[in-house]
Amino acid sequence: MSRRRVHFADEPFTLSSSRSASTHPTHMRQPPHTTQRRTSQGPTTSFSIPHRATVHAQLQVHPLLDATRSAPLDWDMSLPVESARVLLPSHPPRLIDTIVCQPATSHATESLAIICADLPWTITVTPTRGASWETPYVTVGDVLHTLYRALRLVVTGPELGVLDGAGRRRVNEAYVRRYRRIVDPCNRDLEKAKRIKRIDFLCDRRAFLGLSLVQGGIPARGLPHGAVWMLHTAPA
Image (tube, rainbow, N blue to C red; front, side):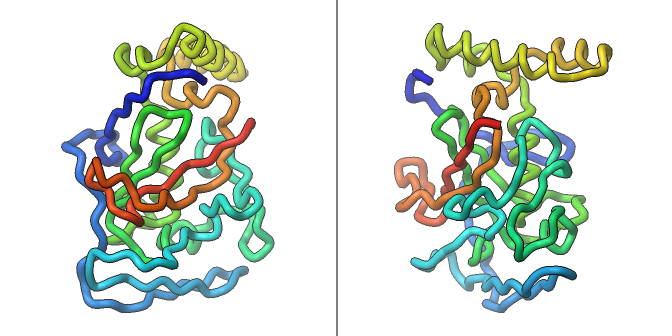
């Protein structure tokens, strides 16, 4: 998809969809310790929380978010997170509470940024207040639910304007296909009326393949190594 190199910085998303000033990712500032959570059907996973805003060279993302694995989740990001099916044999088949409350990265952080080659936005993920999995650091649930909420936002005129004519046609076609998939006529008309959403920028590449670390971060935007992750997608 051809587009000009323009990026919109998003504010952290909340369950109420309220918007506030954007902040850059920072890491937990508290004495180091290790948290352990055991799933009823899976192995114990240990994560260390660093004392300072440093990122170890071996920083890793949670297995269910790891793009280096073969499709850890079967999830069409146009659908609620609860529809996702876990494909890793070492984990339960569904996103149970003991999984979504686990840290998203091996060295837990208060915030991380997600970029994608097909999206002109940087999506900031912070702990989701009021969620059943709420913690002081970013969890698996925070990443997945923030992605879903971010991609459901309606696209503004200037945001659509970053695309060339062919790109806008492809996005509009994706929007039409999306609302036409809705079976119920009333819900279909409601969705149609909301117009183009960010998910439509992905066209048919709505399947979540995971995240990979952006080496070195984006220094020009004040995002250090370990703060930025690339979203990988595939045809849904």
